[in-house]
Image 1 (cartoon, rainbow, N blue to C red):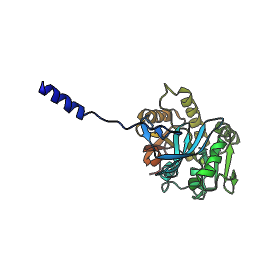
Image 2 (image 1 turned 60 degrees about the vertical axis):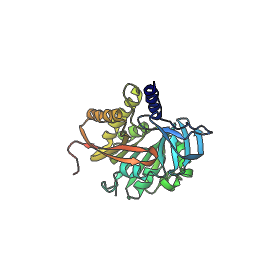
Image 3 (image 1 turned 120 degrees about the vertical axis):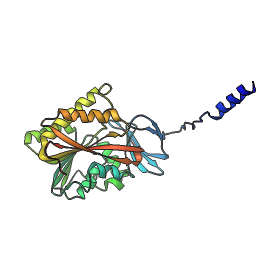
Image 4 (image 1 turned 135 degrees about the vertical axis):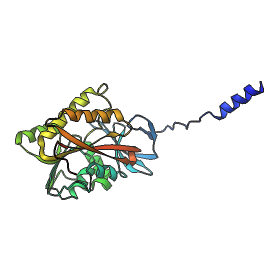
Amino acid sequence: MKQDVSEKMVSVRKAQAFPFFKRGTFSTYFVSSDERLLEYDIDKVLFEETSPYQKVQIVHSKSLGNILVLDDLQNIGESDLIYTETLMARGKENYKDKEIVILGGGDGALLYELLKEKPKEVVMLEIDEMVMKACAKYMRSICGDVLDKYEGPNYKIIVGDCMKSLEEFTKEGRKFDYIFGDLTDVPISQKHSGQLWTFYQKVLQMCFKLLRPDGKFMTHVNGICSSESVDMFKSQLDNIEPPVKFTTSRAFVPSFMEDWIFCQVFFDGNKKE
């Protein structure tokens, strides 16, 4: 009898206590790329509206600064310069006098950093004007003043569906040195995101028609823990014509609380050592 009670007491001592789920007027929880629950030190919501395309929020974290959140997914924070620098492979790629397209990028961070590299022209294609206006007000530490007006000496922002602009560029016979994919995360799987994968495949095909022979398609992919979506993205590259090769890089992104995968895609035979 004593032994049974003792064993039960030991079992109770080993039981794991979970922290309380905090509730309030706004959520302090988001999920990782593989849908684990993450708690943030968010103390206020600076902006919250729903555009024709998505729910747009900018929240303030005591440790990470302001964070752009789209449809309840963290997109970029004031602490995330490493995200932008890894996406553009800063220090490894030369953007001086280059012609560049950004797909998405409504937070303005990539445009802001690319313009420091003195490119010939950057064209940014963003569908959601609400995101740009919110970031111009609340995320100026990452976008500067590039979202205050939609055209400058060497950049232009086109508000609308990126596919329409890509089709127009193709008809005009335009070519670019770099195209950046700063759109939604790569879908988790074909099974659950078939339409999104179809869209992504179409974007990839159109981008490679617009790249110069030594051009590159630069994109973020997904979190390191979302291995299925990362593998699926790599498999999609096998369908590109003409054939392409790719390299990958990774970086810990503070507001994501995880390592993120980035990909640099180029035509087969043009890999720069």
